[in-house]
Image (cartoon, rainbow, N blue to C red):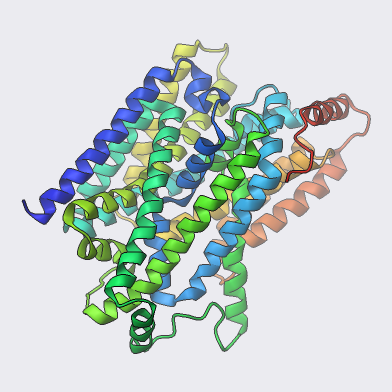
Length: 500
């Protein structure tokens, strides 16, 4: 059999496994809460691997190694910022959010949590949150579909559109029927595949180059300095670049597809084990991605490989270094990174459309069956819009992901933190801050400055939320009493105790 045949067999096995898991999840999904949040039954390991896999997307195995390949270890600051941000998110947000969302009328989406926690009778906060999710996730999902098309184009010399539609179609199939559990269970398998691939590729490449000495010599021979985390000439643009890269860590607390895993934990105490598992997985995965990008410089130098698109350099190495069947499963791991994120984001978009927009305008509460059908229809609708945007992509994968990441971090991050730790936050403060943060991301991105837009957006949201809340907060009001009760009830769940 030809190399291509072996690789296609591996991909077919992977696709069949994902659809099979989706069908299994379909049998476990009995009502609307199951479809949107898995019945709050996730174990720490499942939540951790699912959060990690849905977080990283195609940029972990394509975007980040490509950036390291082009610019060197300097780009690793993004990974450092993400690792710090993920740890703080698990440490300070996960346990409280799991408890608070249950106390706040058993909220199963981020927008419904905002409304219930802040007692927003106008419903403006919930609607605005739902709109923010739909806008930024459409870009995010589109970036995943772009990554799928680029993957097939570079790996099999195939047609971009065909590859994009195939990835989108399979992902849509298991998400449409399996819902949250389908996305979560496939995430676990996909996360493990990504980890194995990101360890195997650099290790085998280093061995093929004669060890670390051979890698070092080849990098030097390339004539480009790729080994400095901090350049010798520390200029203002370099400092801005480091700050911007670290700023990616700010985005974690505002990513709905990640923090919804916290909400789905079986209890708040599971966050401790989840943190340990999740951060270990993330550290090893990021280390593998950075190492793969750096080793690729040496590999290309030694073997004279022509790299048309830096974001595909890991795919090229995998195809050369491994048996076609093994390389096929490694290529499937790249697809896993892409598809795990798309599926998680489709579910969040579905919940925003059904739970946070449709339910708000509905005259009476629909039946559980109607809600599940509406959720599946929403998944299909969002996928179609994102697919149309992905037909002719205008930005790189990393650029698309960066914009959407900044949008959620700046719009939701400060509100999540304040809602968990500050009793005086009001619905009007949260709404004003959210609008300010989201608008700043759009405006700052249009200005084309070097500073990552999440940083000014996050800061402005925080300031506006606090100022407007202080102006609109009414001590002793019924809302104030309810907030005190909610904080007390959450404290009774012992989620605020120091964690080891």
